[in-house]
Image: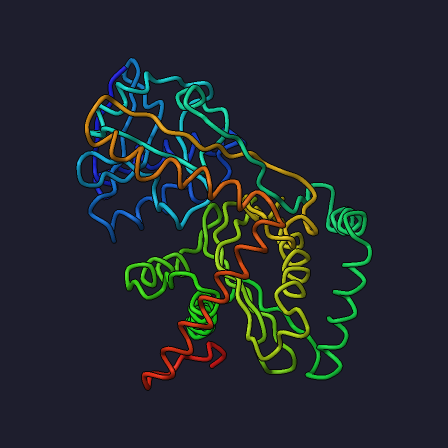
Length: 372
């Protein structure tokens, strides 16, 4: 077995074709963050992105995209931006993990959204968590019945707010798979405002992430595409989402809404309408990812599993990485896995966001509304 490392842009047509073939052959790899198109886009924007190509007896048997940072610290492709990573390979491929690290020039590789159970990484998994999905394989109506079983009271409340929004602001309309860059810009402005308002780091303050999103929005093929949806009340956009899809799976990525319509729960109303549109477009599921947000538990009708863990070679860099990251990751997992702890942490972060906003206003700066 031979492992060579290249930059994504150096992949040839035969290698890209084989990557797609391997991904389609294994249902556990049906996630756009594992698609070659996402790796190519990341490679165009970040010089620390690499791909390990695995060959056995002259046959291409696997691809491992990853990030190589200073001191041989390895991270999953896309890091905090992505909700799935792993080895794209023939089923059951098992590599000697430390040999893989050596070939990749890594001292350590930590992961938190690995496809659970992959033979190369399974011995190093320290935790496996469910990721909520909206499953449409039995049809949209079957999914909706499951939502009703999850919480009939919540569904009734959402439908009431949906009707109220339409009654007070105009008929509702969902724009599915919009190619309008202005709509994408509006959504990202809402999301930036949400990050700041809730005490999070604004991802879109980094120009390369904006460019990545724009490039993904422009990708439109049968097997991979960016999907932008926008919910309108009358002629006014009130909520939206941008995610990535394969031929059958849409992954949740950036949902946001106009806070002026907050009393109508526009984000949930949008998700209900997006689910119907996704099922109508032939998608089998929407992957909402792991985590403790209540709406995921209310809307889910199935689960996938992702794992956390870490593998390393003896080195000072690996020791420093453990000290700096492992305890934090364990604490974060405990919080995000529990809805009650997540809500408590969310309240603290929102308080921080309000304090930051107040300080900005006192110093003469103005926080953007995110709605325009």
